[in-house]
Length: 310
Image 1 (tube, rainbow, N blue to C red):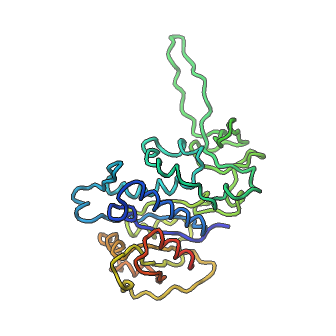
Image 2: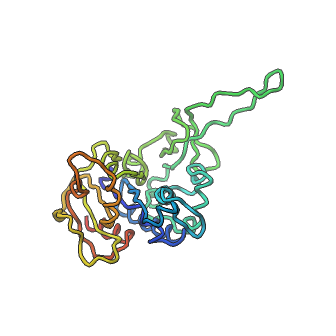
Image 3: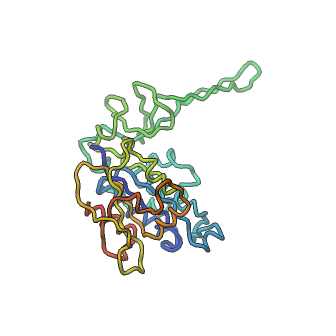
């Protein structure tokens, strides 16, 4: 079963105005990841939102532990969301060392129990892995110099966290995240292994960053695109009423690919500000309906509430 839900959240949910340090940013990402796994979200899109004037002038969002530029907020959030669905034995293979240092809080949090490999005892023969090159023997020429070899593009070897590296029947591209059947020594789809798959037929949810508002719609993780775009007002702690978008209320429909945008309207307007889309003058023209949740809800809570109401 391929998920039909795409979740969009703003990068501002871990900005200085919402999270004062790495710990709070990590907890925010964790709650979003847990809700996404619980409700089988197939894709998470991070909408890169320009920060406030002061942050734009300094070009920095200052966490207590580490300075990050505004654009790094999206990358940090994306990395944290990916970390929470990555088996611990693959972390060093999947992420760069400079990124892993941001996981010091995340490593202490419980694994999300709804992840396929955490709950499916019947899928014991399936493992998550990453393809790696075969260890080559160093050869020297007559002059004693090391003979350079052309790096291979494919391999049969997969690191699955076991003592022995798994050798597949067929070669696959190097540094590819895969789900494998350890009995047949073959690559399988997450759908075959766990009964569900995310966007691009990936394990868990697929994460991408939308640096432009339009790319939220033009670069979908699903080849068919989205059937409905649902807006949920969340993260606005000072408004006493829903934003006046003029959009109708959401009505439940089956077999639809849904794009759920959970953000405060001001962030949507900021992201849309520099767009030049023919025939579109307001962001609500690219949306279909709204789903109301209690006012003043934080983004991470709004994600859980809105997913539960779909």
